[in-house]
Amino acid sequence: MKKKLWQIFGPIAVAFALVAVILVAPLPLGNLNRGTIERAAVSLSPDVLAGQRIKHQAVQDGYVPFFGSSELSRMDAFHPSVLAAKYDRNYRPLLLGAPGTQSLTHFIADQTMIQQLAGKKAVVILSLQWFTKMGQMPDAFAYYFSPMQTIEWLRSAEPKRAADVYAAHRLLKMPVIRDNATLYDATKDIAAGQPISSATMSLLDLRARLLNNEDALFSRYGFKANNLPKIEKAEKQLPAAATYPELNALADKIAAKATSNNDLGIDNHFYSTRLAGGKIDGLKNSQVRFDYCRSPEYGDLELLLEQFARYHVDVQFVIPPINQKWAAYTGLSQSMIKTAASKVKHQLTSQGFDRVQDLTQDGKEKYFMQDTIHLGWRGWVKVDETVAPFLEEKQEKPVYHINHHYYSAAWANATSWK
Image 1 (cartoon, one colour):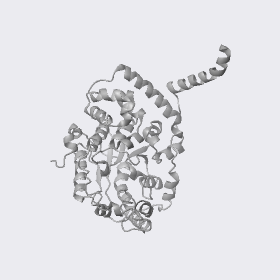
Image 2: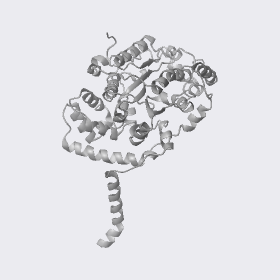
Image 3: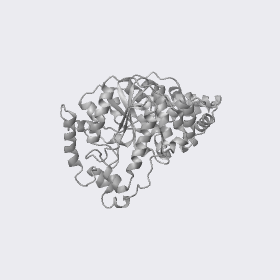
Image 4: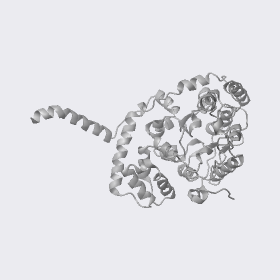
């Protein structure tokens, strides 16, 4: 009987044991091929954002992280990835972000990459739409949530460090953390200013090894999106060489055809699918009460800033505008936008983050926006005028001086400052 049972269940037990060994033991894996990295860099995949292996190799190969959200998916002929490829720049963007990604998501997703970025450069496209009353939406955070990156943060978190205590309090507001007993217990300890218990830390260490091996094994297969054909098609619209005035002229020509079915300067497809057929009628004056000046996002942004400062990452920030015709239709306050942009810039520049391209006054420019809130055509050209020289040329190293006041509720709700 024992022999028969072993014949039936023995192979299954051996298979499970082998899988366990593979997932727990350190794995000596070589590099991913160039094509995988090229595809991943423009995929905007949640698995790339939340993973480790692909990001590590991309940075090692000279890719520059472009942190942002949904604007990164607007891949017209003047998108950073298209221009870098067409004109054979000495960098390639690693696009990190998608609709719903904000500072807190990026802070967590950076954990296994930030040390590798030490002394290097990055670009952050910082949308004012992140700075809402709620800040990071819990559902969006859960969608992009990375247990591996969260565990990495917990294993190095210091219970007396202001940034880690603030991050722990913010994470405890996210249901995806509360639903995992181990993560919840560890995060609660940090929030209370206490070290993580040895038992919980052992569980985190084991889970980290499993997740790291899983990422290493499956990273090449974890994303399905392939935006390379879109990039290559867009490249064909560009001349072999061009000055910025020539690129602007071409942007005007392309955008004029792409925005022909509406008077808001919005891409035809976006307008047809999102606003046409009476859909726009219910949106008139719908944003009168929007306020980007009071938000927990200011504290979440500070997490990113302190992380960049700790590892001496040189960052170019871009603050995109909002389509001014759209803002007028929805009643979005221009004075509020101006105040919010000023507040963001104050938080950045007062701590040594002086590379800030503020485009919030350009929402009235023709063909600057692809839709209601996203850069396109001439907007991307103007971004490139700042970003390309920042990345291609040697820069003087910034000097940062972090101020923990920016984690406070007083700053989150401030509407005036000196």
